Image 1 (tube, rainbow, N blue to C red):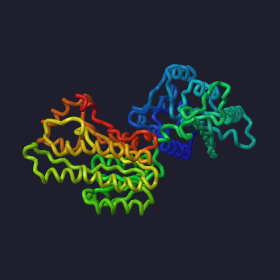
Image 2 (cartoon, rainbow, N blue to C red):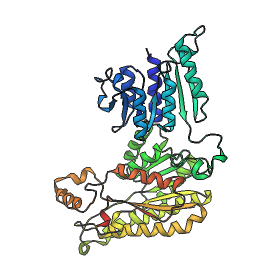
Image 3 (cartoon, rainbow, N blue to C red):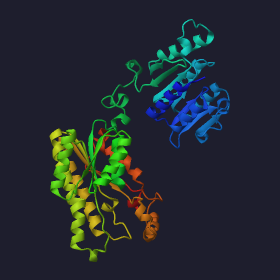
Image 4 (cartoon, helix red, strand yellow):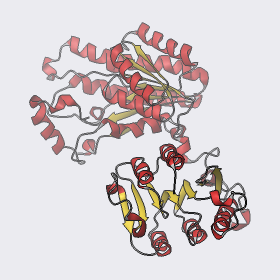
Length: 447
């Protein structure tokens, strides 16, 4: 019977590996199954034979459990034929035919790269004086995995005994005689797979307008990908609130107040980040404002205020951060433009905003071509209409109905729809992209 220590191991494993699909071929306690299911995303699942399911059908996470009928060996063959793959697999070392199960899983390519296979009940193979059938089966099972060059292993010493293997992306020894081309595509560029190239560990980023909305979502995304993040906002309390959120995730961050339309504020902001962390790798220039009015009624004050933030301020940030990056020989600048840079959104009237965002795109294109040969890439993101609490007011409901009719996706953007775009542009995976306007608008600019 598994113990508390085993359950804690499973809990840590799911937190570290973040699986989406788990295949469970052995008996686990209801507590362990709940622990595993709690670590799955809402669309994740734990697949188990019907013979094991009866113990879990009343567990709190029952909706994530899928039962399969039939013998375990037949179930594995069916899943392999369907091309199913799993992030985590459980096989009992003392159960009948565990080696057959393991071979079916590996030959059927059912364990994903970096996927984890957990083998409980290995303790019988280590106890002195144990030479019974269960101990022999356990030793035989672990010996097979240890001999498999596709898997690296570790054994947790405990009364219960857990043997864990991870499927490594590429074998340490590549057999060239079999026609395998050991190039960057096979082994990963600079030895890194695509997901590793998207990571931002060791990078320093800042996000202007980071205290709310899109900027807050960008800050969380960059931090989750591994970057240290400076949160810049005119309202220091908003920036500090985001820093508090990030700290709960273990993300290194700092809050700063700045008005990016003022050159002295931008200089102070950049100097403070460099003084604090020694460099700037990612400049996320997101701050912007919008003041709606008919073109014939747009005042010079409204025009200047919009351009001072949306274009002048963005230029000041690009230039100040760009100078740091050029001296480093590397950097990523990501500017927030808008779908309004491509079309004239309607029925609202926003001449100054539309024009300023078109300027952001052209500024991005110009800097992108000027600086790429010195290691600095400049790109921008053009979001569509983003769902915020403000647009759900009674006054704006008619506008929302009109906007939805113009969006092929049939819904407004969520800030989370934009997070992958900023991580991609901030990462080394996008090193060959510069001067690009990445549009994330649900197709609205196509109609």
